[in-house]
Length: 267
Image (cartoon, rainbow, N blue to C red; front, side, top):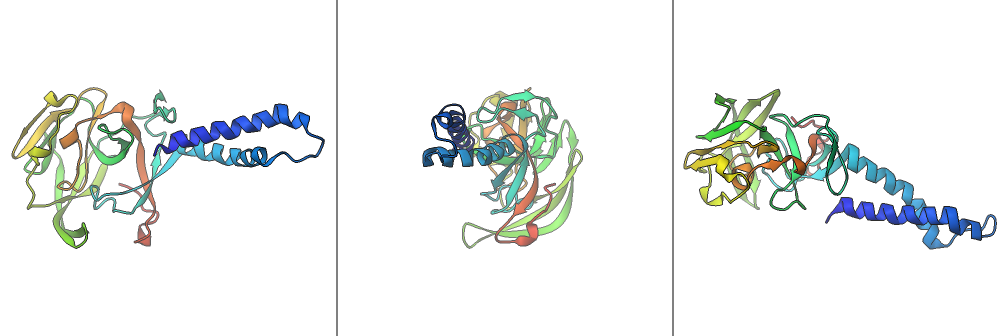
């Protein structure tokens, strides 16, 4: 469901009826006479729809986390807020940038339109920016030849698909100005080569059983999930074009299963 498009259609309809009443219908009614229901209802909803549309389009938009690809940073069921203007002002619906503000930085958590199906929103961590060479070898990240700092941080278990318990090792990773937790499952191969699909600039990447190396092309970003062995990300479907960016995730505002997560910032 394209919610921004639905909001735009409602905004146009209610706004059009409000203008029609203001400049045409109102003049034909007797003084103090009430307008018909099909005029009064849209007029009353128009200001609300306008405020919601502007807030979601240019300031903050809520999202719900549907999968465990960003565990332990984000859990299934987290409701998050995304800053829509951090990476520039964009026109709603068509997502065309009209004003530059800041480019995505390594280590930031970004929401974007899934390159293979732009009607879907994905959330991952920015690992490589344009011009970077990203290497993932034996489950260690290397950016432009420099290993990313990675320190053990205990163990982590979670339930996946009913009663399937997943055991992982937790690490603290530092990338750019950001420190965050990642999960590594020692029983899973470094990369599932069968899952790598054709994608634009595929020739920029080389794969083998122990990992891969990708050169990030101009105007694109390389993203990965914090749950490294349970994430469909740039390793498999390619780079994120700049035009697909939605915004920067910055806060968890609700979780029905764990109220202690309310208000947590997203590192």
